[in-house]
Length: 428
Image (cartoon, rainbow, N blue to C red; front, side, top):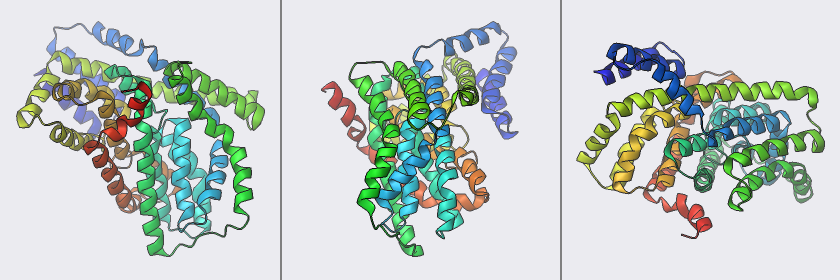
């Protein structure tokens, strides 16, 4: 009974466009009131428990580091560097968007931030070069999906906290799939650019220019090296790496690039605080929602149902992928991970699926959800940057969505692609 009320109220609130955190929290409170056996003070306890986590401190610091590097103009420097590398290829400017998004993903940890930062910088240049509006918007939106797969990734941090899995292993596990996603989208760009007869740019003087822009962008490119190198060098934990990234970002932007000043810090901090508050609000409400599901044995029932269909790991992952692709159409990654990880972990544990591989596969699924209507956040960011309708962007983005689904299928069938780097670092 309580599960029916919980899901019914939640779906109604989503249909009337209530914020996801409000829908999660309000549906949980209504279910508890109707049941009448559990005091509402448990809601406060669960909210506190959700936030009382040292690893989650990585979220605000990564948000701050990303905001500092974004405001500090790192995206422009990355674009200049990548443009010097691939501008001589047909559709090179569109490939610049994808490659830059991959580099920027290693700084921001957010798909929306990646889409916004890269889109605002490169869309005007693509329009000047005669690129089609829908094509440009689709490229930018799709490129942003790497933002939550390539480390540091906020969803991977949240998965690690909820599932009790090493965040460092998840970061390394997401690296190769994130690169594969970028390469798959670049292949689509090349095919479409050839069909549309987009020309390549003149690359006279390229080697000298490449070295110059590389030096200019190298400070930003060092951030992911510092983060992952520090974690696996045993210098600091993932949470401490977020603090180091924040101070490094301040040093680079204030003293190397000199693109921000002390006057900018309050505004940048406020931006990071708002982003963190939204994420933590969702996590808090999702923890209450997930506790209610667990208390009513919903995860065990779902696990029993899936295992009654098949116990083969590959088939189980196929069913879970279908579920996650559907969930991603209306839930963002933070909410989906917070709700579904407690539900799905008994299933993957029972059939022997590696938890790190599952975490990365789940994140790739939800990254695809970022470009899937009706609630694909990257679609709305691209719409805001370009001013064209969601419908037009959605039609244009279909080839990229198919390419990303192919990458998802590849890492699902061959999870060793994900586990290669974590296993290499741990000597397995």
